Amino acid sequence: MSYLKPNQSTSPRLTLIATSLGLVLVTLDVTVVNVALERIQASLSTNVTGLQWIINAYTLVFASLLLTAGAIGDRFGAKRIFVIGFALFTIASLACGMAGTISTLIAGRVVQGVGAALCVPASLALLSASFPEAASRARAVSIWAGVGGLALAAGPVVGGIMVDRLGWPSIFFLNLPLGLLGIWLTLSYAPSGSKTPNRGLDLAGQVLAILALGGLTLGFVEAGSLGWTHPLVLSGFTCFLVAGALFLLAEAHGADPMLPLSLFRSSVVSASCVVGLLTNFAYYGLMFVLSLFFQATKGYSPLMTGLAFLPMTALVTVANLISGLLTARFGPRLPMVMGQALAACGYLALAGIDGRTPYSVIVGPLLAAGIGVALTVPAMTAAVLANADRQRTGITSGALNASRQTGGVIGVGVFGSLVAGGAEKLLAGMHVALILAGLALGIGAIISFVSIKVRLITKSNSLPVEMITKGETN
Image 1 (tube, rainbow, N blue to C red):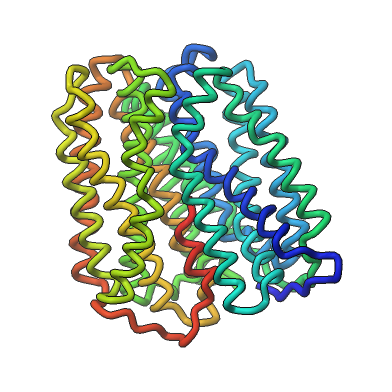
Image 2: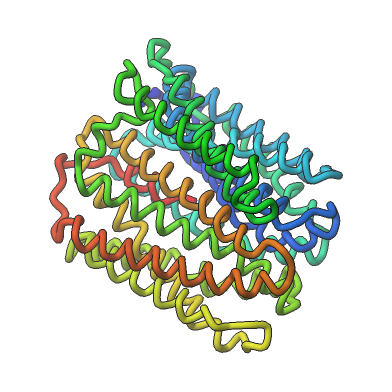
């Protein structure tokens, strides 16, 4: 990204607060909505398919735009794009909270996804500008990432408290004061910087990426209620195949591709992106399904549901640190294989639970799954960046993050289609989803063992810490 030079009116600490607020809101809205699903379903008279779209409308747009958003920030200025993204996210949150129909809520989530995609890359550019010294930048980005990890862990509990006490719209209204504060801090204290007006934008690739991922999501989400042979479902999968093929052609021959295919000449980069997709496929897909299980089958309140998820999220930060230590000592393969194997065992151990299963039996496997995923993500990020050319670390980490977000979209779509259709189908579909998640993570562990180097040998002597952290958010 282009270098942004701070001016005399800037405040690095307040810029850190502003960018951290942005990450907190973006991260919260990945998980906080899950605990409100049953209340939203009752309030807006929707079905499981509608609930899937509430989750996926946000994540789909976020994943689709993430790679292009960095280039937009370079071209028009990171500060401007961060403020625009933050404003879009905040306004959309107001619209979500006021939504009286499922269509309005889904539309608001789409705009939230656009704002989130613009915020994340621009926030890293602002941090780089505010902290030009490597050591201070490393500390700032560590704080930024740590705050995001805490938000991810706190999301279900915060959401549960607010939904129980104030109703489901409150989880969106919470974003308003924090969003306005973040925008004011950014406008007042973040550095203004140079732009790169000649930076190319891959508009054709961007449109095709949205069509491909949107078609795939449409097929999986609607299959649960319409059936796998319904014309709309088949049209979605056809759109995915056609747009996906055209996307690959556009990226292979475009002047400024958003996703240069040459990145995947590295088996480590390719394997890590596949592992990232499989990991989020299991994690976020099951967070959606288990939220329905806790509320619809076990009768938990939103607050109790949030607390039930705590074992999956509470130790994320600690496990991330342990993963970093293991990676530094033994290389990324050990924590990646160990983490995915542990998470797979956790999910498979849950495959026999039902409404009569006491929570004391559920908590152990949830803890294993959460720790396993948290061990995997930092190691895969380190593996990708160690095998990326120095000048392409940004786009490489963006590709990993996009693959992870895509995995989450597919997971909610596939697993949601399994549980659509009433209480009886919920339990049977959840068991299938848990088995599929365990198998996916088992495959990921095998891929990691075969493709990831034992030792971490970087192509550059100094990978920028902000790029390493970038792949760990959300």
